[in-house]
Image 1 (cartoon, rainbow, N blue to C red):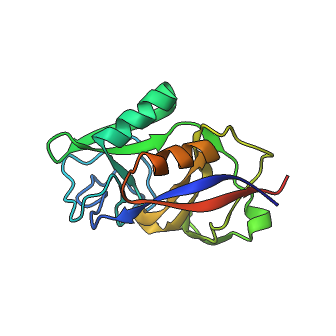
Image 2: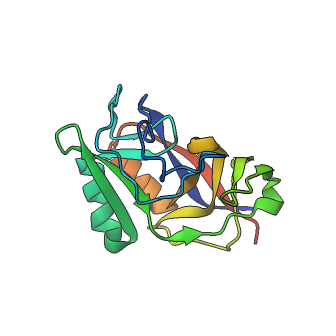
Length: 183
């Protein structure tokens, strides 16, 4: 087992990304997100950090953090929404990395016959990736989502150099957990 990157989390900002979302955005049965391009018109954030996460696990970042990601990863990052005077954004990597659910022992609970997802997908960390290495300067999301109902979200994976850069640049709210290769 070799550490090849980090899962990037943000501190809880108290917001609910899907609060008031149109019915077409979430499965009516299991509450899985059906529209990954959805961005709420308003987002009530209780606590501000450079990086934070909503109660439903969406990564929210400052203008400075958004600029960092767009400078490093340009077209491989989606930055949508503009809340709090156009200073906060939902950032999501477009590049996908395979998660090794078998090695991790991930559990898929209550298959949804409506949308094909599951009500819960648990056992995400430590993250075991199904590849040998990732670029040190990278930003990915896992091919699986984890959590329950509308809180299901991909893990955001950054390369080791990217994690170091985020830390050295003093972005508040960043929380890192190791991601491993078992290949």
